[in-house]
Image (cartoon, rainbow, N blue to C red; front, side):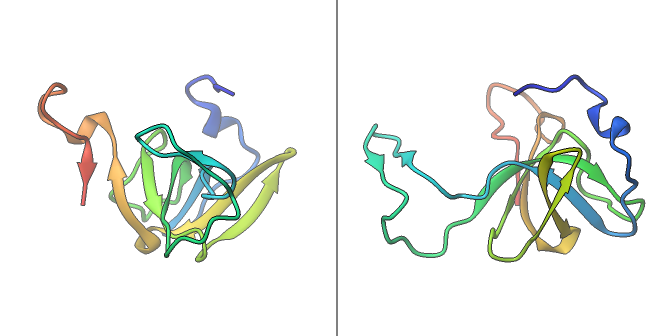
Length: 115
């Protein structure tokens, strides 16, 4: 479900301090490997990180912006529902990586991954 740019400004909340609100990517459910193999949700895997899109940030957040994709540990989060949509709330320090086009130099050779 694609949202128009500026969707975060329409939320009836304002993030405080170093909090980051993200949508998506809890790492649960079936997924496909890069080779096309279906991996069921019941498969035992080690600690798996997940990707999500940043929706809103507090005024003390320095490294991410709304629209960035971030890598985080799904076991270290709080869930919140705003207007019937589920979001994940975390601190900026709980993010492991940021993937955004604004971080890369050239789009053809840059991964956009900031570690």
